[in-house]
Structure formats: C-alpha cells, structure tokens
Amino acid sequence: MIHINIGSNLDSRYGTRFDNITIAVQLLVQSNIKIKKISNFYETPSYPNQNFPKFLNVGILANYEESCLSLLNINKLIEKKLGRLKSKKNEPRVIDIDIIDFKKMRKNRDELIIPHPKCHLRNFVLYPILQIDPNWKHPILKKNARFLINKLSLKFRIEITRLNKNVNIKP
Image 1 (cartoon, rainbow, N blue to C red):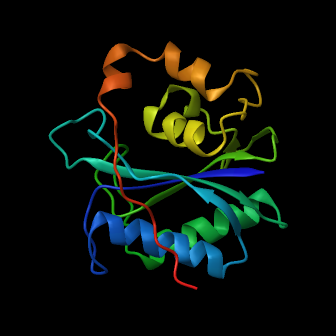
Image 2 (image 1 turned 90 degrees about the vertical axis):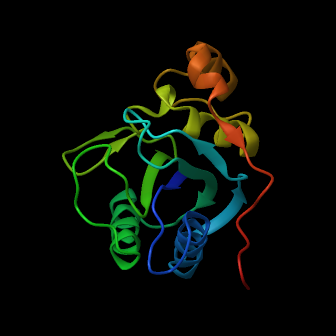
C-alpha cells in the first residue's frame, strides 16, 4: 500500500483549497492510481509562519503498480497543472502532493526520500493516516500512527481540526 498526503493553503484559478485537493485526487485517479481510502479534510495553521493562510490536507491510501519515481513524476505534473510555482520552503502553495510511504520501501535519493523524512512529526500526516489506516506502521521507526501522535507536543495535537467534509470523486 501507498500513503499520499495532499495539502493546499492557497486558492487557485480552479477554485478554493478544497477544489485544488479534489482536482488533484481526480487527476491521480486518471493516472491509474487506485485509491482505496481518503481521509476527511484536516485544517492546520501554516508552519512555521502562522500568519500565512491555514492548510487543508487529506491522506490517501492507494495502490500503484509502477515505481515510486513514476508516482513522483505524476505528482509533480499534477502540481504544475494546478499552478504550483517554485517558492521558498514553507511558503504558501496552491497544492503539495507528498509520497509518505511507498510499499514500506526505503529510498534516499536527491529527488525522493521514502518514507517521507518528517512524516512522523507532522500532525496533518499522522491524523489522516490514523483515520484511514489505523494499523499502519512507520517503515523505519516501526511505530503506529497513534503512538507517533502521542509523541507530538500538545500544541501540535490540539491545533488540528478534522472537518466534516470529504473529497468527492466524480465517476
């Protein structure tokens, strides 16, 4: 199984942050990524600059038959199509698509590190994983999402909001 996280904190020419994420999911489906589960939307303050617009994120549990580098290329093409521009680290962005875990693989190359190197520290990654795949374990740390969430600071555990809203995929 594969875990993908999609985030947005800027509106785009396609609409709102919700629309950006929904379109990204639709484009993943059109690219032969078999989506098994999608979390609710989660909202968090921007990090580290909380003056930036809040982020929306969803977690996706999926299957994909090609390589992780092929998936990375698809993600980059979707980001480009939705209007993501190169910017400084942690700047606001229309869309961000990250591979969190790819079939428990470990990869450390310039273009891709799997599992995502900071996934165990990010509330907006861990809470969606807990929702859609409660038995998932970090491929290196061998700890589940609940354990990793409990290791987060109280601030990171309370500043995330699970919205009662889902991605609607059109057939």
